[in-house]
Image (tube, rainbow, N blue to C red; front, top):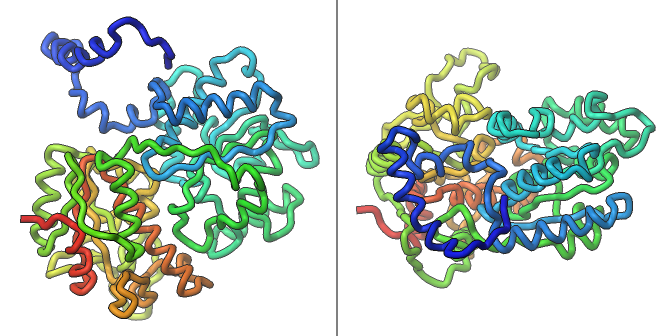
Length: 449
């Protein structure tokens, strides 16, 4: 966390890998640099140098803080996957905590994704100056332990909202709708208020870290609602452009978006990045096994194109026998992720978990070494329009498709695959179940041999 640009800094940085290997030879360090860089502790560490985009964003945010949070307007930081939104939020919290001018402020990170929230809490537990309660969920805004008192007004000084595209509105919430209504009642807000409204109601300076292309269902707060509530901040966000996750860079992310939208102009290669389509599902799985041996943060993920029959607590239909698997392709049977909480991390220690198939709810916000993506029959190819489109009959997330129009479902499902196809740091491997859609994708992917 230093701005120093000391003499010959580039030379010393280039020596680091050799020096690290010497430390390992002397048994003063255990893990390789690659092992460390693929770990959760490294990813969510606040002790990192920021890139130019992040530094500009930090300076703009800190200017607003220094100018006085009581008169500051909300801030939106917008960036595609891998542009370092979460890293910037953690860095900012650490910097504010270490500055004596802000030591008495009530500052928190809101992480709407439950599994990612627990991962952040665990990863930051041993960082000086952090507590588990620094990372909270949206409903924690009304907990007395966080400083909330009915009628008191805004009890948080600064709130950093990671994955803000996952904030909810009162649509398709399932069993959690009762708790949602209780929070609205405690805040004195109307029944249709969103979680974004909760934050605005309770934070003097809310900072939203947001990607509109990662809104994956009808329960997510819409972009138009964000623009209406945040005004100029949403219309003119601080942008992060530099890709830090995917080795294919910004061009790869745009390429994936264009393929899904049916407007890709031609085949591209990405130097140093594996981007392969598998014709045979057995070959897809064999390739995964090879990568998992060397990179244990590799995972198989899929769109919600199969019913979750093994889900704990699922009610069985009359005469139905509990199932031992959820997905069957070419005679191979697989299970959905056994948990949404730290599923990626559990697979590092337990190969059985690593060989499950992760759904969007288990993977959003996480990095993978290699992403192995199964595209199911929730996405098909429309020959007349010449582009992929959603297939409601092949989509099994009941909350995801409730009250969604055809156009909305198209966008949600394409956004899901956009997220899945942009998780892999070193590469992305794809198997497409529908042969016609596979033929379409074959125009733009390197073929596995």
